[in-house]
Image (cartoon, rainbow, N blue to C red):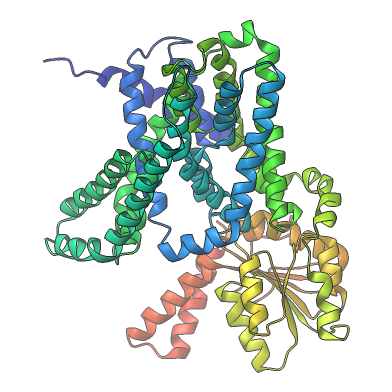
Length: 585
């Protein structure tokens, strides 16, 4: 039988990557770290087991396209407008500060202005693939730091367009000028506008027609055609393939078939994205450490510490509190995959040589390896937030101290609600109807602004802060209700609430039962629905409401009543089922 090119190398890559990813998971490290390590081991600079690096890189590009397409499927036009309205200025500030710092350091080391501009471009970009995958896995795309990161990454992807156009003009002997760049930018803007118009007018009827075939395979092919076709068309206008794929995802997201398309494309996306991370690992050259260990280490520190600090400052300038700014800074503190594109472009036009690039690329890959690990650890590290305290006070990001000023009196016997999503709005509506006083602490500045217009007592504050809880008069509250999606933040709010007001009952919504159990080491694994899961003699009642339990109970109750059981009988059956499922074996 004729040998199929790449089949042996792909078999080796997938096997080694799977083994290392499992080993990493045993140490509670992200899967991405295992994939990068597999690439570094198998690549041409280590064992050399994989020689078809160029072919693997092509497959990796497909992975980036599919990843950005799937992320685009989760962002409608309305959602993008909402995010950009909040963080566009912060994203510009992050990119500008990072560019300025890298440009200045490059000049200080004796490099030319043109090379310093290229290095500023390269360093300013973060890894869209690594960061968005991590946020999606931890369900943090809608968290305050997640929205800042997503908006900043989208802004960076847009900035790649002028960067790609400018780099050739910096090369020795290059001709052209601002007119060429302006014309290309206008063409790119027209392509983006045309893509979004296409989303509104043409894609929904096309997908409806495709869906009439009742074939899942045909539907998947149509979705892939939109994904790859949009990426290709936008690339013709000078836009990156990844940004084009993201726009393609938004095209489908604005149709009634967004969720179905996302479910169908996920397995294919995960396969190719894994190859992408392996291909990044193959670029790592350990010999650089032997030749220039000091420079490489300084560059790693620059990517992780320097870049992270500047991103944190940008987030705080947007009036995000210390915790959110800290998590956003850690999330953006790594090299970006488009940095490799700009580096190769600069080398191809003879603007920069391989000797100058090698330490930067090696340090960049190390920062990409460290990034998912640091992001996993960041919520547990409070030192960063404490160091940001003076800056936070200088910028004035907190507004919870206005509680007494707005109400005119010291609130008492009130309910403190953390978060102002749909569940919180339902709760506060009911509390208002019953005449029970309440106030809400929220980290989404736009939600706070909208609530203020309607007269709701919603305040911009970080509820993990003791200061914010004191301003909310937690000691005089009737209860505190935590309705946020960040499990780590919920844990810290519970700890802070117990420390500041040990007698106030705490109610926490969690997604899973194990998240509720993690809120207290004293909780015993025995449950009764609707009753406190833990009552400590020296502390408050802690009640957690797990979505997987309450959702299952609600579905069971509806089905049993639909099948003819009376309400009372259905409730008894639900309670018995819950007792059976929740009792430990």
